[in-house]
Amino acid sequence: MNLFDALLHPDQEEDPDRGVVIHAANLLEVGEFQLLQLAFFEWYGREMHCSEKESFFRSVFLVKETPVFLRHYARNIVLSDDRGDLRARVPFYHRYDPAVFDRRLPNGIGRFVGVTVLLISVLIVSLGMAIFTIEQGGRCTNYLPPCLTAQDLGEVTRVDSSQR
Image (cartoon, rainbow, N blue to C red; front, side):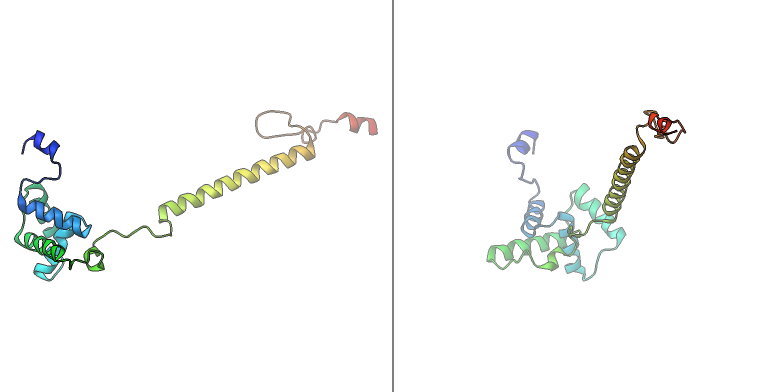
């Protein structure tokens, strides 16, 4: 298949076995590697070991070899869909799916939101205290922190000198 054919027919696969595998994965709405895991489980009756995952991934996706059990499983999926027997939403087919986002926030996001709320609260309380201090004690003598009023510095205001 040349580049021009690939651009005209992006869903067409050179290898018919790979086309069946891709079609079966699309019917089940799972990834191709998840389909490989399902086929392995049905063929051998056990889960793949880590070393097997690596070797099958390399052979299927990099070398483009289709194992017999994957081809058999994919053909059975396509045949059951043709008969109308395929139930793609069965949890058995989706047991390798990553956990769906539930209503709880993940730890990292929860901590970020908590720290952000805490910092904003401290900022608001600090500004409120500054406004209260300025209203009670008068204007700040300097634009830069700390906000020291004339009373804090011990200066006598006109009101105080007239009372003496």
